[in-house]
Image (cartoon, rainbow, N blue to C red; front, side, top):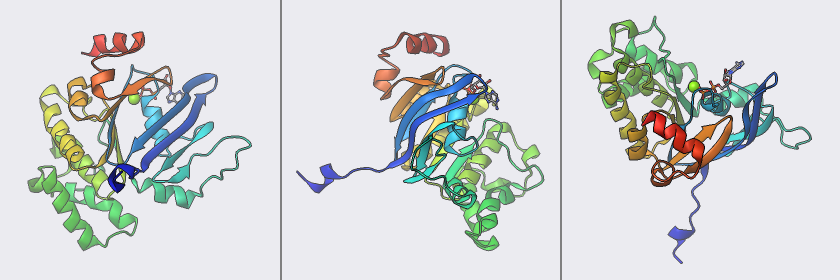
Length: 261
Ligand code: ADP
Ligand code: MG
């Protein structure tokens, strides 16, 4: 056996038995998920099924009541009673989060900063780069998302599709190990969806680890290594697109797909 076949690809994100509830409402009910480095994972599921909460737990915007999340081998969000795993300090959590890019449905750009400043802000604020280095990187990233000519514009002067491409450049600026997308095209007019999907596709091809919540099934089929269908806070089924999208095993998956396709 060659060493290549023995090589183990490390998990970029590991979600282990995560439970999250608000009052008596169980929003995540024992979720296990492994995302391997370089993989594209697409998460599908009806509205209210817990998709955003799952991404927010991974990014430590929410703490699970039970379970843990590890990103690039470091544990965050440990909450299991009697467990020997220790919680990370606030500082360690911030370091973790700088390794995770997050792209929101509504872009969330800083309105008072130019496009260039939006992309350069985080590497400067975290001390990773000085201002000149950060601006140089920001220009490269804006070029990559097709917005080299917009660096002096303010977010309000851009279309939704352009703003989302800036948000993707901003997420890339910290050179994160994984980028999480929460319905990145669902706030866009239909004619602007394609330009954003094209940028995400380019990232997928370059081997960036991506976790994408989306209802764009055709896009999922094209780029996903794995599709995860979640309903009622549980993973109902997961696998390659050729299985989950084309031959779903569960009635709930079939029902969902018949509504969005
Ligand atoms: P999805 O992204 O799949 O639409 P969410 O993760 O946003 O679902 O929400 C799952 C459920 O959790 C929904 O019923 C939502 O109302 C509830 N929920 C989300 N955040 C909160 C919160 N901060 N407080 C109370 N309920 C919440
Ligand atoms: Mg959501």
